[in-house]
Amino acid sequence: MPLNLMEHYLVLTDDIEQTRGFYLEVLGLEDGFRPELGFPGYWLYLKAIPVLHIAEWETYTDHSNKLGIPVTTRAEGTGAFDHIAFNGSDPDAMLSLLDAQSIPYERNDVPHAKLVQLFLNDPNGVKIEMNFAV
Picture 1 (spheres, rainbow, N blue to C red):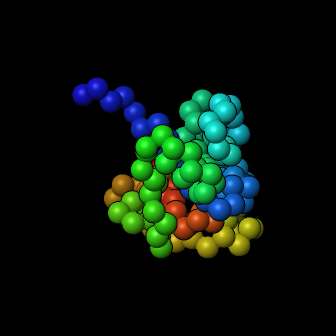
Picture 2 (tube, rainbow, N blue to C red):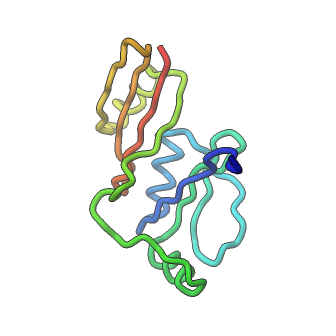
């Protein structure tokens, strides 16, 4: 198969600063290099990989339309896309962080897999899954 790995996902938002803050403060992603692309946004990294791209809806749409690249239309929720998942190593630290910031989440314990799953939404309604081996 010619594919090697999943590289990134893009979140379109009206508030790139709020979205950036959420992913930096809650998930611990880090700001990193982003080339000039013709619209405002951020690339956030997990280790050396820019796993999350953030772009402002209107300017991204204008830019993409000029290139003839279709853009997702606004909709409630995430349509056919349900969630993005991350793997973590310290569920207690994440639970403490979420509780301290009053961020709502759901917890799912999967004892046969020795796994704790946490589910929450970003400021744009994108569902985030976090998996922790215990």
